[in-house]
Amino acid sequence: MPHLHFKGKTFVQNHHLAVPFHELIPVTEKGLSAKPSLHDNLILQGDNLKALKALLPAYSGKVKCIYIDPPYNTGNEGWAYNDNVNSPMMQSWLGQTVDREDLTRHDKWCCMMLPRLKLLRELLTEDGAIFVSIDDNEVHHLRCLMDEVFGEENFVANVIWHKMDSPKNTAIHLSEDHDHIVLYARNAEIWRPNLLPRSDEMIARYKNPDNDPRGPWLLSDLAARNEYRQGRYSIRTPSGKVIQGPPAGSYWRVSEEKFEELDKDGRIWWGDSGSNRPGIKRFLSDVKDGVVPQTIWHWKEAGSTRNAKQELSKLMELESSQDVFITPKPVKLLARILQIATDKDSIILDSFAGSGTTAHAVAALNAEDGGNRRFVLVECEDYADSVTAERILRVMRGVPTAKDAKLKAGYGGTFSYFQLGEALEKQAILDGEHLPGFEALAGYVYFTATGEQFDAGQIDRKTGFIGESRNFDVFLIYVDDLETLKDLALTRTMAEGLPSISGKPKLVYAPTKYLDDDRLRELRIEFQQLPFEIYKRMDGRRRG
Ligand SMILES: C[S@@+](CC[C@H](N)C(=O)[O-])C[C@H]1O[C@@H](n2cnc3c(N)ncnc32)[C@H](O)[C@@H]1O
Image (cartoon, rainbow, N blue to C red):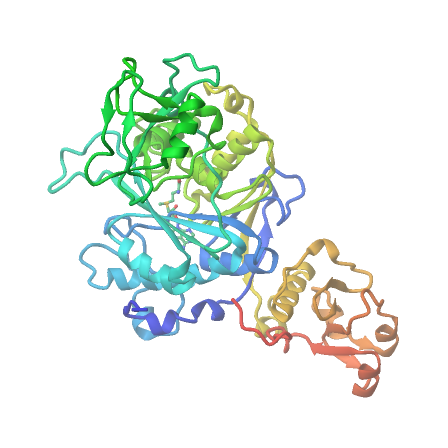
């Protein structure tokens, strides 16, 4: 497979592995939950590279649908490359706004995207999929990066979203009326889209001119271009006219025998006069519950950029000319993605959250179908609170000025707001400069050692048990207080008293131990010294 080369690629290829895990700090007053939890709907403020890494312990392999809407790199969005990659060239990029004059603008964009895509893939369920909004500035580079990260065999579609409800006559060349939504599955052999409900327009095309008791139907041509050896025979119409065969270059799509069977069953239409070329009646009652999603999405069904701005201004109760956020997506666009790619209990992630359209659509769909979908949103800017969280607060609690009754009453639900805390780093723990909380360290060591999802609900603070993995019962002997930590050790009595949860060997983290290796072996304990062995993997696999 051809690979895309860009400046900085060798430095970012494995950068996602070097990004340290950061703590996630709840900010109760900015959320809508009295008890913030990582398993609630989430808004996470911070850079998404660090945030995605921090989400791995709780969310690896759990996200059914990812939607991202990264900077399109148009040259006037004011984004800057800010990843702390160990390369002098890339250090010189830091903080510099990427504009059209920047000759490395595409390199920087690819360097920004590659490690994020790698982490996003880790978060997907085996039957999950990722949708990426983009335009022609970067779509070709994006496709190459996605082929590399997700595998070209997992490419599903490049959807064209017809986003403009009228052409832009000020365009110098052509009016750009569409965006791309690039769709890859984690595994295309497994991923299947949900069918979309038939639109009123589609249903209205079914008519019943002959008052057939089976209800409205749509005419399907009897002739088709696909070669079909039994599809060449003459037909006599009810009015007595003989049709010698299908038009040149085509074939009847059913055999003569099948045709007669359909005619007997009143499923052939000969026109009002009874002398037309026959067609097959396809009854609305016979077609599947929905329609297979197509690759062109028109603004009438998926919303337009104009709708998106209006809907956000109304929701935030601003004058329509005021921009609270300049590039929102319409809720209908996200609703369509959710309809295609989620079930009622799916987790949906958007790591370039902006105004929070994804969360809005999740709450609306749950309210419509009684679902229990959860969203995880990441936004780095300060407006994560004033715009993103504020919007979600409004849609959950209700918007008094809304026309839609459900939105007016509020879709209901809760969300927790988190910020990125300090990095979990050995040296900072050793110096006592920054001691992570028990749960944060537990999640980190458990995930790093086992590669398996961490469930904070399993923690037993009395015994130090933090979870059962495929190979171990895992324990953490730790408190986030330097003075107590100095005297904390795995003693012989403690080791002998550790409960046997599953009967598997025990993996025990503690600052030190007061028993010898032979006794540890007898007790089937693998001892890991804090903080020196917090990066150690116990399952021999590499991961994000
Ligand atoms: C195009 S907007 C997304 C708009 C969103 N789909 C909506 O409907 O409102 C991209 C967002 O990604 C955010 N962003 C860009 N780089 C980021 C990063 N490294 N980490 C987190 N957020 C980032 C920007 O601040 C911006 O709000």
